[in-house]
Image 1 (tube, rainbow, N blue to C red):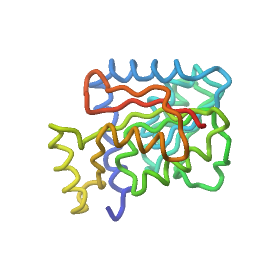
Image 2: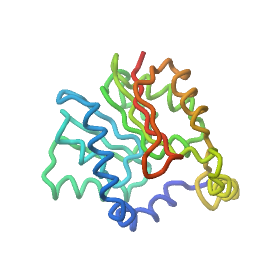
Image 3: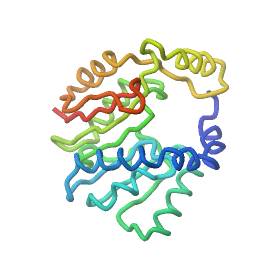
Image 4: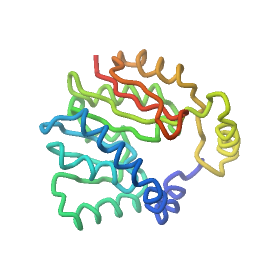
Length: 208
C-alpha cells in the first residue's frame, strides 16, 4: 500500500465505533494485559490506534507510551488521555524503528492486531526484543488468517496485494508461535486462542 498513513487516518474517524461494539471483549483483554504487568512497568503500545488499550492499562503501570503511524489516531488518543486525566500515558506519531526509542527501555511491549500487517514480522520482532529490558515481555494478539476455514484471510490478502487495503499476512497459529519463539529468542509464557475468535492468538513472550 502506497500510503498507509492516509488509510489509517480515514479509518480513525469511525475506529472507536468498532471498539464500542466489542466493549466487553476489549475490557477483558485489558484485564489480561494488566495481569502480566507490575506497577513499576514502563510499557510501549506499538500501533496503539486511538489508545483504548493503553489508557485502560495505564492505571496499572508506571508509564505507557503509545505509538502509531496515523496522526489522527494519535490525536484521538491524546484527547482521551487529557479528558480522562491520565497523566502517565503519552502518544506519539512515529514507528517502532524511531531512533529515539532506546534499547532496553521497556518492561512490556503491546502489539495488538499488527504483526500480520507489517512488511517484515521477523525484523519487527527483533526490534521489539531490542527495545525490551531483560525479562521484559511482548504481549500481543494476532489474527491467524491462514488457519483452516479462515477464507476471509486469503481474500483480504488478495485485496492487500492490489493496494486497496494494507497487505495481510495469513499466519497459521503454529507458524506464528514458532516465529515468535525462534526470532530473537523469545520464551513463550502463554499462548492461547481467543475465546470469541479461535483464529486469533493471544501471546505473552519473555525476552530470553
